[in-house]
Length: 78
Image 1 (cartoon, rainbow, N blue to C red):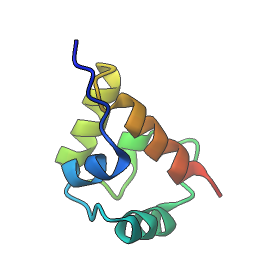
Image 2 (cartoon, one colour):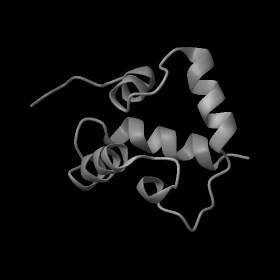
Image 3 (cartoon, rainbow, N blue to C red):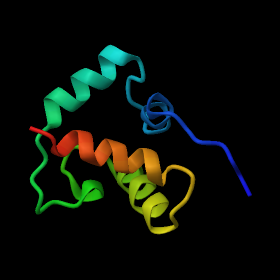
Image 4 (cartoon, rainbow, N blue to C red):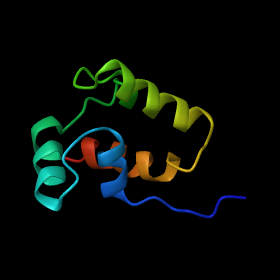
């Protein structure tokens, strides 16, 4: 069993986004609030590979799932 719990900044790096605190804050500020009717991986600001990573990791309940849930909550906060 893999016990590595990736950090929020590591998810941003994996997605090819700025992973420093300011870059993360800027991304969330730019894209929030995400409409509750839109699934996270279907948001229009993801490219195909980013959307696939988010979708597949959540479906598999893989190591990134918890951090993706944090991103989802952050983008839905108003």
